[in-house]
Length: 250
Image 1 (cartoon, one colour):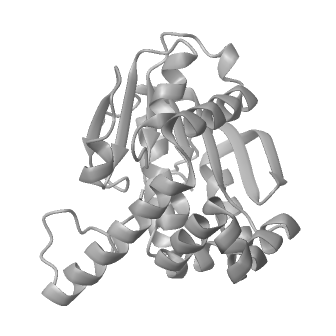
Image 2 (tube, rainbow, N blue to C red):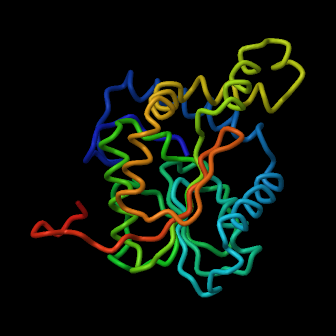
Image 3 (cartoon, one colour):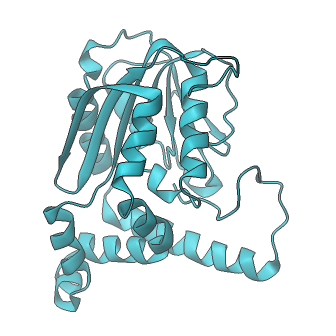
């Protein structure tokens, strides 16, 4: 789930300065520890099952080839399997989170800006919170969306849930700044730690809703979209190409 703060085009083979590696490792470890405290595996699977049903997963063919990006410890894949899907793959940068997945899907450690899948080879792409971890907006977001578009078959489906600035989220942020709330609630304390560890990417994401939606809708036609309880919930289908002479979506 946590992303290495590198620029476009860099991959896991990129050499980082020791100080940068130490800072990244510390932040990543703290974020992952808080993420593990926030919900148990079973709680997260139940949450994801509910989200998937809201996305319309009950109506998707059970032989659909599905990829979850920013899949973390794989509970989104477990939720999909509970709904009867078996052709499952996940992608994340965190080797430690990927190592915790136990299930029938295949997981890969890859940068979601450069996916290891063939053109038009997948039916569904799912993201349960991950785009807000991208280091450089709008460049990294456009590159990730372009890769999602590339690997989806014509008419393919995307389902995305991400944090969104709503009154509810502002209230949650206020609770995260309150010491007594953090002492009384394990979830609030864990969330406060996660926000602290990812603050730069999290805040830049929340500041740019118009840009985010504009890019998402550039590649995918919305079929279901809502904003509530601090979340963007977007379901869409791959747009028909309008490429001109470049071969790229414009």
